[in-house]
Figure 1 (cartoon, rainbow, N blue to C red):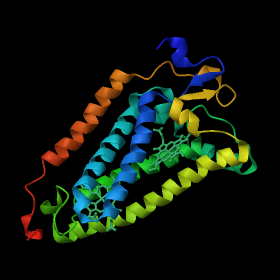
Figure 2 (figure 1 turned 45 degrees about the horizontal axis):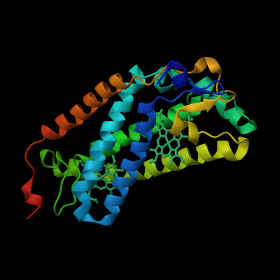
Figure 3 (figure 1 turned 180 degrees about the vertical axis):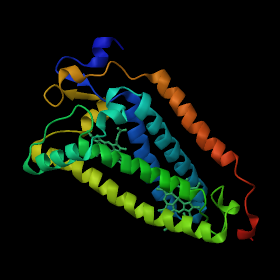
Figure 4 (figure 1 turned 135 degrees about the horizontal axis):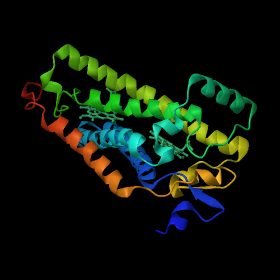
Length: 238
Ligand code: HEM
Ligand code: HEM
């Protein structure tokens, strides 16, 4: 892709790099997958855990990407202090709020909350068990009360997560309903029209090789955590 093409056509500019976009839609798929495989019944638990490991890998990748990715993927680009967050929330109420090439100050913290929710969900899942056939890899390594606590966390955090996702979707929808600002197409194509973002805020490219390294580190970390677990606790099976 030529530099001009990657930056946009003049009427639009590249703001979301490809790894961030793939991360987003894969996260969506893995979370729906985790939920559906839980709903389908216990024989789907193994598949459920695979979706969970993938979600964990994605969250770890996104955290690394938040430090080394292109401008708008970086935490430093979208994590603002309380004053800016409050000012943005006020502007949002009165509307229309100022436009950001990347995430706005309020949305930035919602993203951190969602990433934290994935980490809590995936980590607590490691200690969870369906008490019949399958258990998370670390279930047998902790006391019963700790495993029970992890199970509670896995259940409660999922509800918090659902609320966060609901808020996320409501926020995205409200930009369209109130101000006809389309945030979804840029998350698909990477490009925003000039007018929704300053031309000077375009990113130069997607840093694919670096993203693959970050993904390797994230996947390797999850693999190591699962691999290092002690042999399964057979007591709960029979
Ligand atoms: C399981 C459901 C979902 C989760 C957990 C989720 C999570 C996230 C996260 C973490 C980001 C930040 C992206 C990044 O910087 O890496 C984000 C952004 C975004 N998501 Fe989602 N998402 C979900 C579903 C959806 C759906 C279904 C849509 C569209 C209908 C959507 C539209 C968007 C948009 C437009 C942005 C960019 C917002 C902005 O411009 O600041 N998301 N989402
Ligand atoms: C990160 C995404 C994940 C989501 C959204 C998710 C969601 C859920 C939900 C909603 C439940 C039912 C809780 C209840 O009502 O008691 C559940 C159960 C369970 N989860 Fe997860 N989970 C995730 C990751 C994981 C991981 C990484 C593991 C293990 C490594 C895991 C292992 C289990 C087990 C063993 C159960 C009990 C069996 C069942 O009810 O399906 N989960 N999960």
